[in-house]
Length: 183
Image (tube, rainbow, N blue to C red; front, side, top):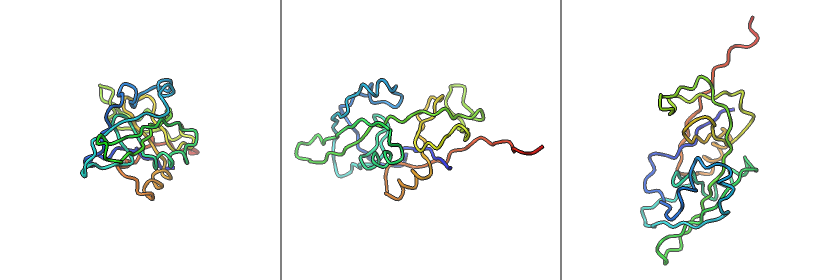
């Protein structure tokens, strides 16, 4: 199965900026214990204007998905847990109130020894071990400093078919397997 890194599209302009959310809680490297201790739903605010774009994937204050993308993730990972953030416009006359979800995406130990890192520990070239994967559709990679969300080809195709916004996909490299069966 093919996999892709799910990346916040660097070319998007004017994404919604959620305010009044505790960034010490809502962060990408939160442990499961901290995630579980977070309320099921919280409220945030944003400055709405005609230029603001409401995307399906956000990177701030953490990796957040729209309600539509949450439903899609739940189809492929029914046990995935989410915490909601209802975002209201600061202007009381504005009834725009998108719903975002903070998913707890499980980690998988699948880093190949062919992965290269800079001396700082930041990835230079990410390479995964295909044998360590067992059909996961949505996961994060353990053992790295960065928050890398990986999705399977079926998830990627479903996102594209549903015209999800705010993301780009980067194909994942897998470690080369030695030829088996040769003597």
